Structures are given as structure tokens and as C-alpha cells.
Amino acid sequence: MKILISNDDGYLAPGIIALADALAPIADIVVVAPDSNRSACSNSLTLDRPLSFYQAANGFYFVNGTSSDCVHVALTGILTEKPDLVVSGINQGQNMGDDTLYSGTVAAATEAYLFGIPAIAFSQADKGWAELDSAARIAKEIVQRRFDTLPRPFLLNVNIPNLPYDRLGRIVSTRLGKRHQSEGVIRMQDPNGREIYWIGAAGPAKDAGEGTDFHAVVSGNVSITPLQIDLTHTAQLASLKKELE
Ligand code: MN
Image (tube, rainbow, N blue to C red):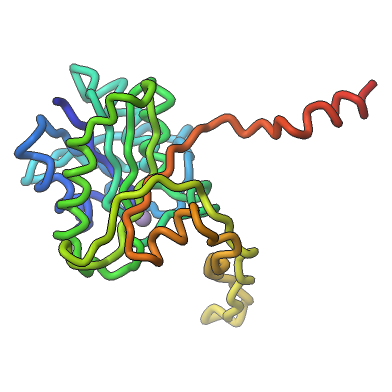
């Protein structure tokens, strides 16, 4: 099996190194990741300047772009063969509910999915890299499942609680929950006295009921949500059509 690995935390992040180490014994891996932390870059592509790539001493390729850039450039430029699977992560911090729209980790997987390649995004629920070995072991197990009954391509979003391997619960299928509105900006002054803003934290979980990713992870389970990209609000189509008549 040929696996392309990317992330949004950058090629030096402990999460991508752990993921590559876990998958190297079971697959031919190539790592193409951003040169720096691009968390929350969403699906953005860089169109206002060219992209270049370099190879680090450990064999990882790094690109001066976003996570979507990395997968795009890898699939259409760097790689000579199409991978069987693209994995992203392991991200430092959860990507659940509305996070998936902002996440560069999910975006790397999405880019592969848009090219018709099955893809899995992996995130650790809590920041700080605690229990990363456990998360990498679970990621390997999930990759080995192959998901033969799912139609190709699939796009899976995995969130892993930061727990030792023997304290992790089950691997469960979930739907995305929803968050409350984000907290407001944090106002500060720059050294010249000008007002500046930091984007504030994401809101807490709002829909975290049974069946959601939030509920699974808080219960100690590994959450897998199958994602799709079509944003059409199908239920509103009929109303809109009537409005326009
Ligand atoms: Mn990240």
C-alpha cells in the first residue's frame, strides 16, 4: 500500500513524525507537509506565488504552502504514482463539529478526496502531545482496517482522546456535533499604541449529544465521522425555488 502523509502543523511536528513512524512498517510512505504551522488554514490554495519543495534529512518533503497546497502539489507534481490512501495529522488538538470547516488537517484529507483518493484525517483531542504513541497506534489500526465496504473515495475524520492505549474505549462511528459561536477577539495594543486583535477561541460544544464526535471523545472513545463536501442545503431548495418563481 502506498500512503501519502501530510498535516497542517508542519513537517517538524511530533504528530506527523509519530504517524509516519507508525505507518512505515505497513506501507510505502511519502511525507509532504507544510514548512511551518498552518493550523486553521482550511482548504486554501496559494495562487499568488509559486510553491517550492525541499527534502529534509529524515526524507520528509516540505512545501512553503498550506496543507491543501502540499497534497495538491504531491498528487500532481512530486509523486510519480497515485497513492492508495492519504492520511493527515496527527493534529495537535481536536477537529470536531464546526472545527472541520477551519481545519487544515481535515483540508489535507479533503484535497485528496477531491482527487478521488480515500483519505483519513487524524487529530488528538487535547493539545500538548500527551499519549501520542497511543494515538499513533490507533491511527495504524484504523489504516489497517481498510474500510473495504465503504464506497471509494471516502473521507474520514478521526478524533482520538489523549489516553494511554489500554484506557482508550471503542472505535465508534459518529456524526459531527456543533459548537456555540466563537468567543470574540482579544484586544491588545501594539508597541506603537495601535489597537490589534487576536482571533479568540472556538466556542464550547453546543450539540454534544449521543452519536456526536464530541460525545464519543468525552466518553473516552475514538470517533470516526464520515464526511462529504456538498454544502447544498437540500431542505431549503424547494423554498428558494418558490421564492424565485
Ligand atoms: Mn493543526
